[in-house]
Length: 307
Ligand SMILES: Nc1ncnc2c1ncn2[C@@H]1O[C@H](COP(=O)(O)OP(=O)(O)OP(=O)(O)O)[C@@H](O)[C@H]1O
Ligand SMILES: [Mg+2]
Image (tube, rainbow, N blue to C red):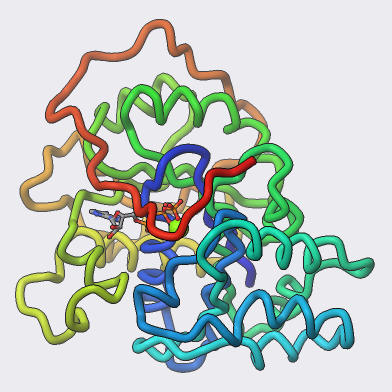
């Protein structure tokens, strides 16, 4: 299974979510899980987990010129502490974009979808911000499902509204995942005209753990907070066979302690299908809620702006 994770503005937590999904994926012990950093603006995970830059996306792109065997992908991955594998991209967009373009324009398609077609493999393609013309689009379009992650401030939603309809048509299943503080979920859904598949709470401690900055989650007490739990619920939803009418799993949490009910949506089975997506009327935003911040700060180390 290939799952594309992407954003359209800011740094709403796509990479963090990718790592979280590898850790919470159902039957993880019997599934080969891979985070593929196919973000054209560059990768973060090598730096965050103290891994070398090679092997990774650049070495894979070079190897892909010599062989079209999808198994070669694994030779260019490294181990994450969770047991999942990671295909790291170099920091900075120049080399990442070039390698990605090489992979994506291969005559018989990028190798990642072929790897992900194995029944016991799940690949989380961290596509980063999918601006028009992104070389990651070729990979995202071949995914089984796409999750668009967005913050919930007005500017986030305006950008999301502008791309939502297009992105929802890239894959057979797609979902809108909200993050951070901002407009209440019900207002966002109403304005965007689609249900969200969930809302990740602002949870900097767990996020830092997931991105390698602190000791592993299992060793920390009291950090089994909203982010890990919501990622686990989302993982269950994504792992389910596609069904537009799937109902939320019975094991879903009823709420997130400390978070107002209207800001919490259970990642419950609704992966939106293309028809019926409407534009977001940015001229009439719903009422503001505080605090006015984006939930978390973007990671800019090593990043170059997209062209
Ligand atoms: N749910 C969350 N709560 C609090 N902080 C978070 C959350 N998710 C991510 N973060 C933090 O926000 C920062 C950005 O996260 P991350 O790198 O995952 O975003 P991204 O969307 O991949 O950004 P970019 O597009 O720049 O690669 C990191 O410092 C991360 O620890
Ligand atoms: Mg990222």
